Image (cartoon, rainbow, N blue to C red; front, side, top):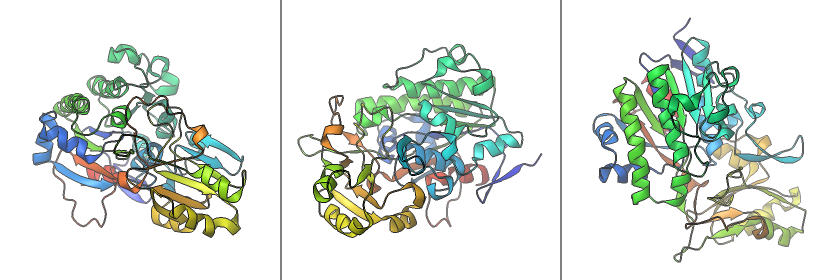
Length: 403
């Protein structure tokens, strides 16, 4: 058995001690900075002083699926193929969730390490990620959301509820993320994986800004579990899939550009199709509104549509397919003719009639744009980062295993 694996052109060493990689969903760097400054994260305060503490860029669009898959493949979406939570499949001519492993075009570091004898465990908050992260993996892989239905054959473990000693949490709660960490600690105590990947949900970040009491309480909870994992001898490596920002005006009202309504007015109903890659089954906290969209328009209308969209209030960037794929390292066959990115305090929708904002019980906070690309990059031991032209969240396994 070799102690080095090559995945998507990069080499990774098997860890000499347990490695816990954490993707904190929606973790704008300021969440950690404020929580540490306020005394809510004493363990991470020690890491900030003596470990590796940096800020990196996530991949675009700054959504959950593309970034989790980039982290575990060490590569951008152009390589692994997952460019959103949701996309238009030209083969079936249908808008579908991109959570089936058939859409994944690259191997994962997790599966490769398991293939050379490493004990690997994956715990996600939502089940939408589980099958992608666990593709080809011989190990443990389950979600908090479906923790009551795990089986040894499918998930590599049974009776998760008994192991964690917690009930299945609501998908719309901080408990969904806490279950992930509680499971990670239980696995470390019982199985002691060589590599553990923990991925949370951004329910709290969609509702509460950095430094607020609820946000600090969430990060205090997270800190406690990280301290327990570190005390058990694990190296902790932490990043995020994307940041998070308020998408409202001064009064707290959502600021939305409804692209499909605009294109229908300009080109006629049915002439274009707007896809919002943020879309998933869990839209109560964001109403399927994010800061990145792709649009399919007639070839003759691309330049005109781009110019008119660019002139709308709240728009930061409009690119054609070729330019967008080159800049953001996206797979050309899975995006539309135009890529649209909104400003920091705006979001993009399809048609006003298709977005139900009744479930919002707090001012809208969301992500997807360039303004949510900065994420924390933390390792619990000091590692030299000099020489890297640009630090990306998907460099985390490389730094943690090879640094």
